[in-house]
Amino acid sequence: MKFIIGNWKMNGSKEEKESMLKSLKGLKTKNKVVLCLPFTLLCGENHGITIGAQDVSNHDNGAYTGDISAKMLKDTGAEYVIVGHSERRLYHFETNEIVKQKATMAIKNGIIPIVCIGETMEEKNSGHTIAVIKKMLLESIPDSGEYIVAYEPRWAIGTGLTPSESEIVTAVKSVFDALPNPMPILYGGSVNADNAQDIVSIPYVDGLLIGGASLKSDTFLPIIKSVK
Ligand code: 13P
Image (cartoon, rainbow, N blue to C red):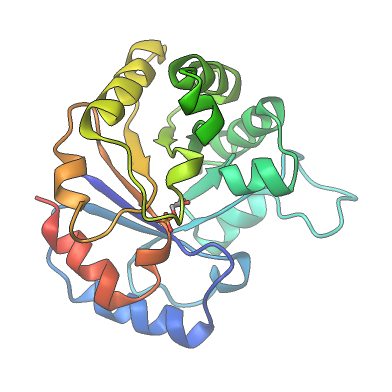
């Protein structure tokens, strides 16, 4: 069983959600499919499909206008939440410390956090990938509980570029070796139906985190079907 997790980012209407869930419902797969939707689409009928969110507050409750707590997420039926995605680290200045607090808050409320890490192109080109992702990992993961790690090189997100097989195995193995307890490790960044099966066949890769190609059933379903 591999994880195939879609991240819709800031995309999607009620109608598009309904249409995607209906096509997923009829699909026979041994993979664990999860759809991480924007907050606006979390409530409502999910047709038995596992739903996740894309962010969560690092606070319990209170005067944090616009934020959504882990308890509120739980209330919607969300079972997973992405924390520390590079777009949130970049545009919302989320530090490893905040990401760890968010992951911890999710676990406390019975939601599995998907902790994202990944290097920039400059860090890769200067040979610092492993040092960078290890530091991000160890400072971002919760002290206990069940979580998932997603290795998403920033330069591979939405660019059509992917690391080589040996680059992925080196990075993902370093995550595996650094984890205090074994947890699933995903790869994310420009995954499509042509590269999905090759990427999940790489040692230590337990699944995929998919952005653009998860938005439409004619690109998402072929990925799910291609992953054996
Ligand atoms: P793309 O699949 O669009 O490159 O996005 C990856 C991603 O950021 C998933 O979280």
